[in-house]
Image (cartoon, rainbow, N blue to C red; front, side, top):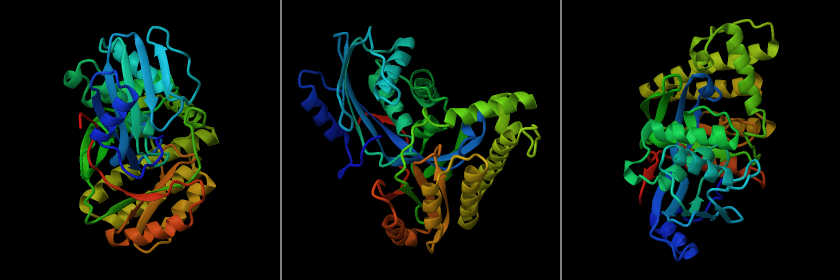
Length: 383
């Protein structure tokens, strides 16, 4: 996750930074991939549910220049140390190391016949806090910049699926396709209604004159691979087997209230079926401009993630409640996998300054603050 910067990176500033780090390299290929905030629909993507993520204007930049050295040299403005290794003998990176994403991107491209024989790579970005899909943003940007086919390379759903493979096969997170789809397919001024079971999508307008989306960092870090994320998924896999339902159709096929003879499985399943219904209702409310109903659905989602799926924590609960106490706030919930990270809130546009000031005043020293999230579209090559 990139640390926040005083000035957002641009294509020109990233190219200059690349030239400073690699003065002997050719002009780089540039790629940008946004982060995303999930408005509603957490822990249903990997079991075939519907989700409503929105790309944000902050994201990850990658500059990469191919060569024939057989070496990979990489530097991250936001991470230490720099990396250098032969492509035919990559090191074994520890869990959580950003080198896993870099190696994963190269391996995925190599399988597709599009990996460079050597490359210099610079990574930077300004995703301000956890829970905003910095992993998918990094994966997509790396693929776009390193794809030897250039503009003829991966796009759309194939690009999103390739980024998902990086996390599955090289990072160790059995994530769904939501984050990658939002990063790749997102449109400006809209969230993405994404049906994970069949990978179909449609835009849901988020008009800035009607509704403002705010995000605040709880200050509690979380690492998906080392958390209970995979344990929840494994439990739902058992639920799908017991119900005789294909796992990737569980969210849309499981009947609410299905008994498993196991209290934990029933709690987890209750969240999945309830969240699926809430997402469908939230999409309808947003299209109708019914923001009070939209906000109530966010509140209900947080309660389910806290009580049934058990992925909240005291800091997230306090932060969501702090938003709800502010005049003009329609609703708030944890966003992302939970166990820490961020809270998202829907508020009236004329309440943005007051909500941000009030909530920020209560944040701890470890928080990276709060901001208004705006949708500016999905990933792109070039400047």
